[in-house]
Length: 74
Image 1 (cartoon, rainbow, N blue to C red):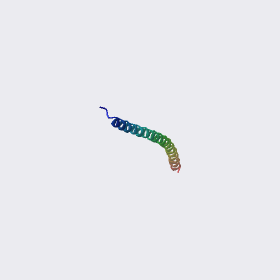
Image 2: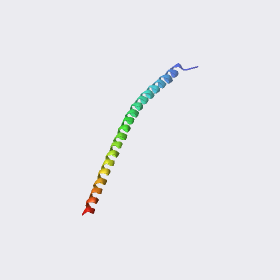
Image 3: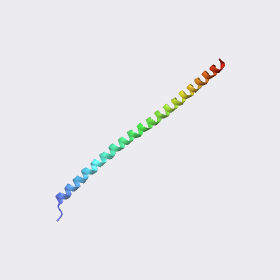
Image 4: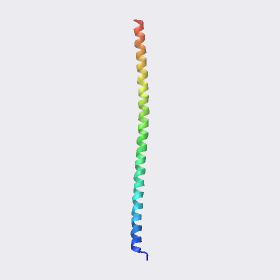
């Protein structure tokens, strides 16, 4: 004989677990979205820093060239 009370408990437990999984998926989607935004911001920041580094390198190389030119004229 089938125990209806047991079946109801099993169904309720399954329902609870499905609800928990739905909440977890929602939280993971939110977290994933936040991480993607953070990654995009970091990639943009990195690109900006690389550009500034290249500008600084160029300026320093230019200063060195001018100093060497001044040195040879003396």
